Image (cartoon, rainbow, N blue to C red; front, side, top):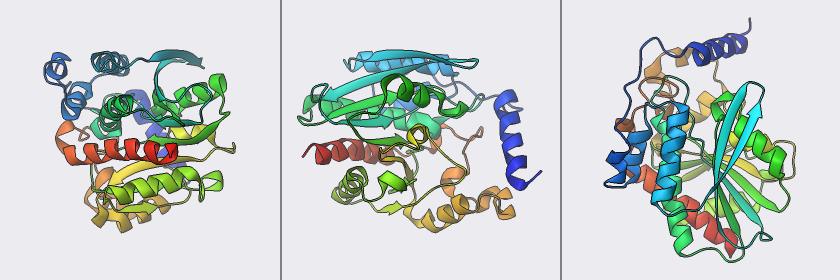
Amino acid sequence: MTGIAVIAAATALFMLLGPAEKTIPGPPYSHYRDSPSPMRLIQVLSGHPRAERRERVRLALGQASIDYFEQSFTVGKFKGINLIADVGGDEGAPLLIYFSHFDPVPGTPAANDNASCVAAAIPALVRLKRTPPKNLRVRFIFSDGEEYGFVGAGAYRKEYGYENVVGVASFEMCGIGDAIGIWDVTGPAVDSKLVRALRLAADGLDAYHGIHGAVPRFGSDHRAFAGTDVAAVGVTLLPESDEETLRSYVDNPNNPVWALNFMRPIIFRTYHTLEDIAETIDPVAIELTTGLMVDTANILDR
């Protein structure tokens, strides 16, 4: 097998069997209900299986008085449900799509990947609902099955299409760091309104941001829009000081040096492992992500 084939096979086996040890489930939903905060939502999502995480996202949306609808889908043997909330302009307005998947790699706490982005998206929805865009409709999709090949995002595209979509951004691993990485900036995304708005929003938040082209091995829900004329990118947070290491990692993921965990980029030291726990998440990173979601939408609205 090639190095890539070996890694792919190992990943598939991990997805099937899960880690040898078991993760410790986070607290009950009442921990969040009694004193809502993004960090508490991350805690109550962490360590719970997919269906239970979905139910807790439902409860959090309801608690925040956010209207949403559900999309049930079946892809092969996978049965899932996307939770979708809209805010802003009417149905004919240009549509901006934000994905934040809630499903975990089985058996992992999945705090940064991807409870962090769910916890950032709900307060962003609340803020945009309070002062909604007038010329833009923002659709937040809390997607299912991202860890199984972006099947929820693919089912969304198949059912709803992408007509009038001004851009798609997958928020992925947004709980560690002080800088914003915008990646898979290729094809229609290059010099797009979406990428320009993300960069302007980052500048307004006084946050360093970096742009990266195609990422060969890692992906997220925006990949479901590959091959269309839609600007579709991933958005991740990272420590600014770690940018060079991260670029090297994503450009050459099969370098043997990455077998040493301490040599990997910081955000990948816990990726898909039992160490992806709520205690590693920085509340400031979550606030930055929420601000980026809100400000990007407002810039595109203008």
